Image (cartoon, rainbow, N blue to C red; front, side):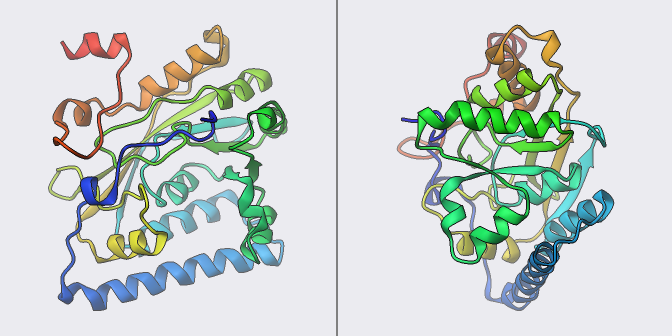
Amino acid sequence: MSVWLPSAPCTPGACVETRTSRAAVPRAAVRFAAVVALVLVGVLVSLVGLRPPAGAVRRWSRWVVRASGVRVRISGAAPPTGGLLLVANHVSWLDVPLLGAVRPARMLAKADIRAWPVAGALVARSGVLFIERDRIRALPDTVTRIADALRGGAAVVAFPEGSTWCGRGQGRFRRAVFQAALDADVPVQPVRVRYRLARGGPSTTPAYVGDDSLLASVWRVVTARDVVAEVDVRPVVRPADHLDRRALAGAAQTAVIDMAAMVAHVPEVGGGCLPAQPSPAIRASLV
């Protein structure tokens, strides 16, 4: 298996909460239309080649999440300028606008998206960095292109788990993308993303996992109530403080692991996800 193609054991049936009622349909339809409208605005801006200021992009990103009915809570802040590698755990399609609300950045996307009719050209115009996830030999060139973008002062968003998880477990951070931060000598900004209910418990409703379709996931989110996205911007990790990409990836993963969820989650027999394996330091802190 390629380093770009890890997989998570999460599935919609085993891991994802579904709470839909007929009474929620009219409200959900309005939310869905609002999300589509905001996305279309973003597409039009991309088509005409406008470069909106960072503040406008952050507000638009928040609006996309809020339009879906999910409240947003962001704690901490990322450096506003300069090369920066933003890394986060990956749960939902909502993660992308949430990271955009932290700092507008270039995204990593699989290369086959470039061949999609219409959408491929639009994505390419947005500054996405394409990766050939099924070709290990292409990995060095991908790392070089990411490093070049970072040296040029851009922020780049990556989800090093390489696959979405439902939030009750987390995957191991793959190391390749951290080599780009080392080569460019730019800081790594860990970001922890969690989805919770307004009353405090965790929510897997926004998870986009397994064979789930994007349409089904979006509809599940817009029909839900009282979901809150918590975005915790952790202190930056500096490459100079770590010997190699393995150590850098480990430090970033330690910063985003949700220990409370890891301790609380007891996997069901016969299905569902397993918690991520914590580092020795984290295991010691749980004893």
